Length: 60
Image (cartoon, rainbow, N blue to C red; front, side, top):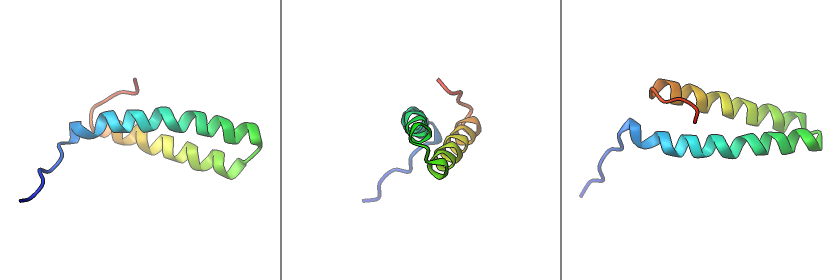
């Protein structure tokens, strides 16, 4: 039996949770002076925000 295909709205809570995780990770990397990690987390944050915008959700 095939699993149901997730609806786009199913992703929004997971994306918001990931957004909340990435911010402290970016801050920690900044504190440690890890410029490459800061940029990686910043890029991830931007992408998550883009995905949420595409889903019609805001950062909350």
